[in-house]
Every structure is written in structure tokens, then in C-alpha cells.
Length: 139
Image (cartoon, rainbow, N blue to C red; front, top):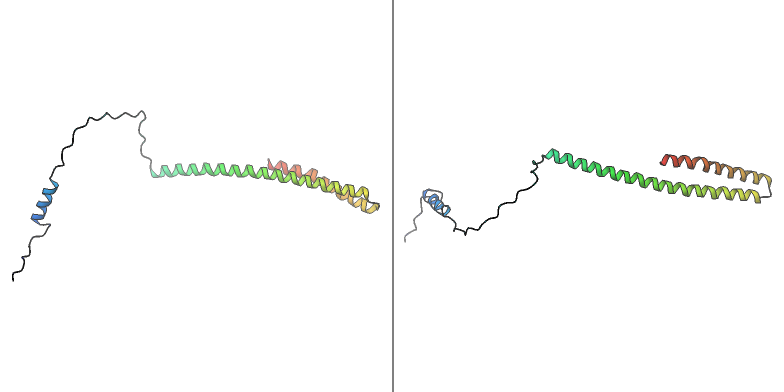
């Protein structure tokens, strides 16, 4: 029996590179020439490519502006809620003072009447002094 011969040249040898040159040397089929329209000129000049640090600065400034807007919205909402809470507090203090005053007028006992009137006056004074001061701080 005869055994097949082994090739001593490698595919990257002389024959292999010549075959590779032949396959790459082929030219593609010619295309039909189509008339091209001239490119429209842009009115604005091209911007130079931004550097990474410039993009980072821009992103940082945008984030800072967004945070400031959000912070302003939070502060404004807090003021609105605070004003509403003060209104409710003032109404409650008026109601308490009024109830205490009515109770002092209905009582037949002099000492109970005096205590209720004193507490009603205290609650009314707190309402008159604390609520306006708190409103001033909200502005």
C-alpha cells in the first residue's frame, strides 16, 4: 500500500501567500456611474469636539441647576404646608380660648370661673404672639 505524501510547505509558505495575493488582487465588478448631487453646505460652523472634562462640567452644571430647582420647590411646598398648619393651629387656639371663656361665664363657682378665664386669656395671648412670629419666620 502506498501512503499519501505529506506536503512540506505550509499554507503560509510561498504557495499560500501567492494564493492569498491572487484572491485579494481581484477587482470588484464595475458599478454604473450615477450622477451625485452636490452636498448642501451647512450654514453653521462645526463645533470642535468637546473634551470629557467639558462634558463633565456641563453635566455637573445641569445637575446643579436641577437640584436648585428641586430645592426651591421643596422650600416653597414647605412654606405652603407651614402656613396651612399655622392656620389650623390658630383656629384651634381660638376655639379653645372661646370654649374656656364660655365655661368661665357659665360657672357658678367664682374660683373655677377665674381659673377658666385666666387660661382662656393665656391661650389667646399665645395665639396673638406666637402665630404672627411663626408666620414671619416662614416668609
